[in-house]
Amino acid sequence: MPSLHQPAAAFSVRPCLPQEAAALAGLAARLFVQAYGPTHPEPELSAYLARTFDPARLATELTRARVRVFLAENGAHELVGYAYLRESENNGPPRASGQTSCEILRFYVDEAWHGRGVASALMQECERAARQWGASALWVQAWSAAARPIAFYRKAGFRIVGTTEFHFGERVDTDYLMSRELESPLTPG
Image 1: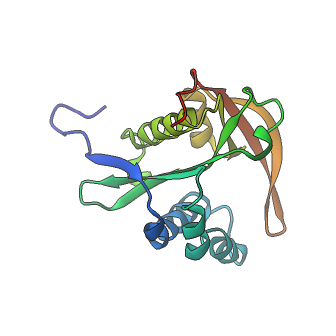
Image 2: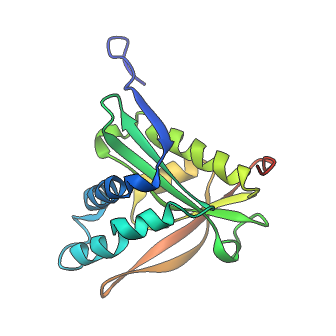
Image 3: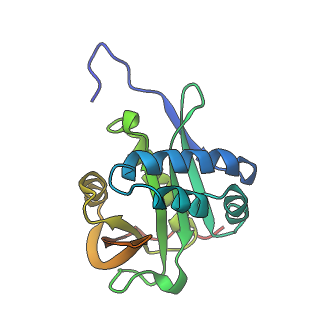
């Protein structure tokens, strides 16, 4: 909570457009390195970034009907976070509640903006979009050693429903599968 002498940080959340794929790729790579660079080093780091955050591939993904990426930007229109939501294939992980579900594939906020409400605003947009698509559950995969994200997801109502492996080059990490039910879906439109 901001003190009486410091105003709350101004930010906004908006959908990412396909023509912003290069900006999204740069943001995504920067925030991945910020979060995992110390624990997931080179040479695999650069290869992973090139594979995962290719601007051409992201531009194609941004045109899909059941994909939404939300960007958080500060008052100077600098990108400070994003959430990537997609409709689940096969309705998500085993034991995830809900008949239909959406996956939060990526969810990152710049460290300088932690604790300022950005993550909550991004999560609200993910929930709203998933409900508009008729989903009854959201799920996310989170590295089991990432305490801060796991705490945030728990606070947002997610619970651990299983584990899976995340392959990073020759390294294999254990990830939690976390899920939460959504309020009644909105009428699709």
